Every structure is written in C-alpha cells, then in structure tokens.
Length: 250
Ligand code: PEP
Image 1 (cartoon, rainbow, N blue to C red):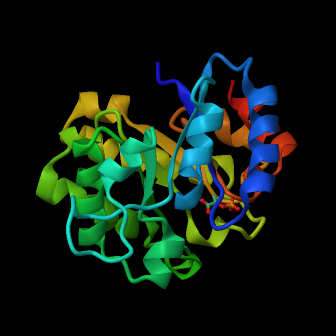
Image 2 (image 1 turned 120 degrees about the vertical axis):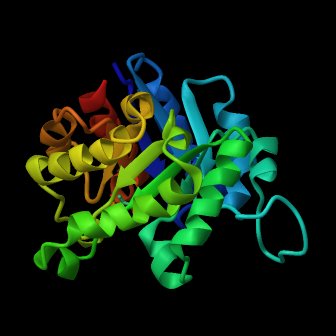
C-alpha cells in the first residue's frame, strides 16, 4: 500500500515574512496528519527558512529545480548536494513551466533525475501533454516519450521509490483540472509502462496528479487507485485550501 504524498509547489511566490506565516499555518494545521506525507518545494533562497521552521515537524521540504551536474563552473546553478546541505528531501524535476521557458530537453531532465537519486533526493519528475496533444489523441505517446528519456538510458529500477507527477499542461494554473477518469487513465498507463520492465519499481512508484487541484476536486482525484496524491500550485499558497487537500488524502 503506497502512502499518499501531497507536495506544495510555491513557484516564485513569497518572501521571508509571508513564508513565515504560511509555514506556521502549515505546521499548525498539518501536524495531526499521520497517514499522508506532506512536502513543500520552496524557492532556493528560502530553503534555510524552511529547514529552520520545519525540521522538527512532519512536513518535508525541497526545491523546484536543480542542476544536472554535481559541481563545477555552472554560474547560477544549484547542485543536489547543496540542496541536501539544507535538509531538502524532494526536488521537482522537469516542471513544464521550466521545460517551456528554459528549453529543458528530455535528456537534461533525465540527468537531473539521476543526480537527485544519486544524492538521496526524491525526484518529483513531471510529465504531461499540451491541450493540442490531448485533442489530437497523442497524450500517451507524448508521456511515454518523456518516460523513455529515463527508461531507455537508466532502466526502470530507478523509478523505485521515486515520484512521477502527471501534470497535463492544459490543467496547470487554469482552474480546469483533469477529471478523475482522465487522470486515472494516464496514471495507469504510466505505471503500466514501468511495470512491463520492473513490477516492483512500478508498485513502489508514487504517481501524483498536478493541475488545478483544490479541496473539492481532490475528493474524486485522490479516490482513484493509481493517484497517490498531488502536486499543488495555487492552492498551496493558502494554508486553509492546502490543508483541505491534505485532509482529503489523509
Ligand atoms: C503546478 O504548477 O505544479 C500546479 C499543479 O499548479 P496549479 O495547482 O496552480 O495548477
């Protein structure tokens, strides 16, 4: 039985004062949740703040990106071991907002995934199709190509205890979430692709859904057998809404 996981993606929001308030509210409202794991992915400068406020709580923290390289002359980059220095346990890899704005290739994303695993971070690997791709009926082809960037080079075992987040691009920040059936169908497809190669890895893999999740639609989404929780953008900036989503998963 996989434990549910709910991850907040704060994106480029917040400041020291507002983060303090939001984290205090998270700590107060989420401390009694024993049956679900919760993590918050903050902007890099606030990792120290997250570490100092969350270190004795049941809430984990992490980052929204990291370098594909371990160390070196890569101005502006942040390595996996730097994230570990601040107690981070999770890192979002290949979020579509980054893949689009910074032209991240599938190969780069695969390297980041492996860097995260090598350094003991849990990668949250984002996959998902555009609206045009869904309307053309090629969403499974798109997502399997994204998975293959890792599978073909590193095999399926690397997905053991990792996290994939299915984030249809048309659902991110639009208020238009996938239905439970649409999401379940893709989650089953993702797990099936891994299971063909490594059944144990597929069973341990958590597959989150991300894209306009709120406390209302989470009820249907999180009831699906292959949906192991959510990656939450907008609603994670409001402690009450985030708590509502975590409560559904608890
Ligand atoms: C996201 O960007 O990961 C996300 C799921 O955002 P939102 O919840 O705002 O759609």
